[in-house]
Each structure stands twice: as C-alpha cells, then as structure tokens.
Length: 386
Image (tube, rainbow, N blue to C red):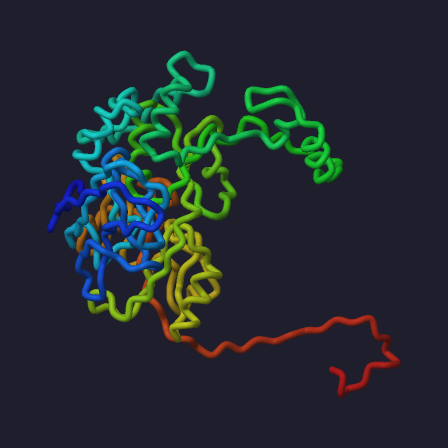
C-alpha cells in the first residue's frame, strides 16, 4: 500500500503443482470481512502472482486450470486510512514498492524499471513543454511498450484503425472480405469528418488499481499524454487524445449498496464503469434513488437540482489515483482539499477516479403529462378525445 496505508495481517502462500482438478489456496473475505486462504467454487477471490505482481486478481472458481509452476500468493487486508469503509476487490490490488522491486528485477519488465516509479516530489506547475508523439525520436520503442504490457499482465491494447484491413499496414495484410464488410457499414453523407490522428496509440484495459497506477507512472515518466475513458464519451474530446495512452475503465462494473455510510445514511459505492441506468436499476431494487451519473466530477446538472442540489452535492467519497501514482480516498475527513476539488473540477483534472460513494434519497412522487399527436381530422375529434 502507498501513502497513508499499510499492510496488515500479511502472510504468504505457495502453490505446488496443480492440475485442473486441484484446489488452489485463494485469498478471499468471509462474511465477517476477514481474509481466508481457501475459497469454495464460485466465490470471487484475489490472486497475487509473484511473477506478475499486478496481475488481474480475480477468479471465479476454487481452482485454476493448467497451472504447473510454483507461484507465491499473499492475502492482505488494507488499512481503513487508505480506504473509507470497504473497497471493491479490484481496489485492494495496489502498486507497492515491493511490487515495483519485483518488476525492476523481472527479466521481461526490467527494461521499463525507470518508467514505472512513483513521483514523490511532483511539480505542480504547468508543463510548458510538448508531450512526445508517435514518430518522435524519444518516443518509447516497441520493446518498451512490450515490457510495459508485461507489467500490466497483458492488458495493453493497441489502437488499430477501423479501415486497416483495406490496406497493407503494420497492423496486418490487406483483407478484401473484411474491407468490403467495413465499407458496407459506412453510410454515405454529404458531410464527412476526418477522424484520423485523434485516437490514443494504446489503451490499458483496467481491472485493478495497480494497473491505473502503472499507467499514470509510465505516461508521466515517458512524457506521454494520458487520457481517461470509462463507458461514454466527452463532448470536449478529453477522452480521446492523439497518440496518447488511454486508461480505459469500462470493465470496472461493481455496485454495492451501503445501508449506512459513516452515519450519513444509505449510499451506493459505484465503480468507474457503471452507467447511470445501471445505478438507477440498483437503486430501485433497494427502495431508494441513487443520485449519480457520468458527470460526478463536473457538478452534474439534473432535473432535481432545485430539490437535491447538483450531483456532486451527494458525493460522500472518491477513490482516486493522483498524478503521482498514489491511490487515495478523498472525503470530508481524508484529503479534504482533493475532495473539494473533485466535486466540480472536471473529469481527469486531478486524477483517475476508480469508484465513488454517493448518498441515496427516498423516492418522491412525480407528476407528468403526456401529449399524443395523431393524424386525425377535426371531424373525427370530440371533446372526449382531448
């Protein structure tokens, strides 16, 4: 853990040789919130691999197929200072100095050891120099990107142009069948937009907080533009930067209903990839209305603003990775200045938010009117029809 957090109740486990039918010692939380070493089939669990310290740490069964090597694991319980209440499982997998040490010495990731470090003395002044772009001499080489991908456990996705199959390119050979299929789906319009040169070069398909931390550290230390994207898009184009590294949060999909959050009433903890519609459905199932949308860092205008305030007025806490790579909880009692800034400062301005806690409100009666317009004539309309 980093910053205000610390490891508690740390202990190691070792896998011997297991086959598909072997039982693996996963780490998981029981009903009391304690960490156990064994998990029944069907239970979500945490896996920490010594060879890939920030590996995707989720499994859905009591065994892993075709595991033949010795792998070290650790069950860890995070400090409440770092995480308000409880965190989602993916937020408990964080980048530590111990993990960085492993990455620096591992053969497949040692090439990027200087690009993954935290910045403990970050400059808060505006950067007056340009970010490097594809084609610049000091842009990371392909071998560097490959090593970075290894540190992410293979979650780095290269951006491939949609029309690539229509040409002989570095992304592959020309494929007439695929090209014809692509062309058939493009509509003819008198107004055409040129979308070239606006997309990121790579995407990090985030499944753990550690991957967010690695992406931020790599981009900062490489002087590469970093953009953040969850499920939608930005009208200002902030989620798509030419030649950038994109932190893609779409697959963080957890929702947790909290009956009481620090004495402030019921609330929802929502992952960064959750849409407003999904939150509304979860709120309906729990008898309350979740007050959330995809705008929780930009005030959040809504039809009930006059009654409940802006969307950010209902935020109780943010889990966020800041520009120096640190994972923090921002609330009224923890990093309150950052909490104040996040509530209206704009998305992507201060860090990457991995989840948010939002208070709920009782359902209220709503009156609405419906107008139906038809093609009837005056001769067929009576007062009863109005």
